[in-house]
Length: 232
Image (cartoon, rainbow, N blue to C red):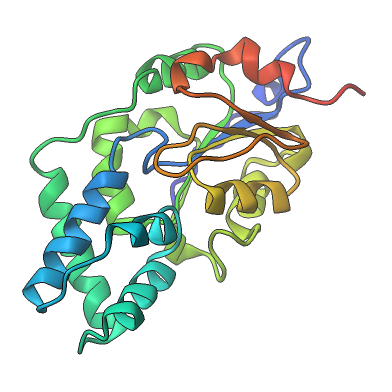
């Protein structure tokens, strides 16, 4: 976990109830959801199994323990969860070593949040070793705090990662805007009491109270995020 938390005076932008922005990583800021599926398919192919494409919607956005466990059960592969997790992390690290594309609008949004000194956290179900590799592309200076899936007792869809991030920044979860791309991440943020922007990457997400759905991160800017905050 990194922690370069801004001074109290910068936590709430003048004239706005927005206290912080909490961002998912895979599929939200970096175009990697397809990378994970490709790696999973390759690993299971070496084990003698072919993944059903319909399973992609089941495993997207969740912690590795859940997605890997599902794939072991679905295929009957002779491998333990711990062994598979090592292979998947290694495969993903090799994959992102060949280039890591950002989602459209990601670089612009991060730059805008930094320019206005909005406390920003990266909150991911990926393991710390993966986050640290991805941060070299995103720019670690853009985040006051980063939270990895293997650093909380319960990761997404539980509220723990977002509650941990809000607590680390010293802000009210209800005054945080979260940007997520999967139903699992949205459930985590909503359970923590945050205002959510969903930018679906693989599976559709429907609008709901405290949840705004947009087709692209290019539609999300600071004005948009401030407008999500409740009055009072």
